Image (cartoon, rainbow, N blue to C red):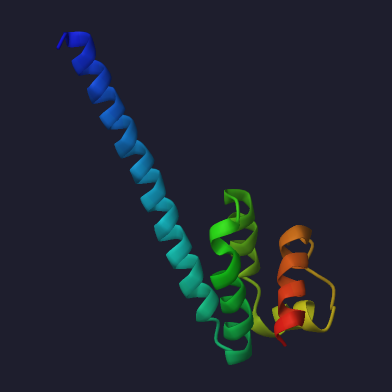
Length: 109
């Protein structure tokens, strides 16, 4: 083997570790978000938001995860009103993620 082969092999190995690190970081993030989704405080919201998380988190892009995390900052009573009773959304909430979450909640409730 030449030195070029060694450096290419080492580089490929380093690339795999970088990908693995990003995967591990995303997995930790998904676990944290899932936990927060299931531990809201009101059992109904745990079921609705946690159920949505279980079904859709893995498919969300990083930007959608950011938007969902913002939704998780809304107090339960207000979020329940937005999702189930069509009360107005906070202006900083992403319309796309709110539409998906609302549709899921309507099917589940």
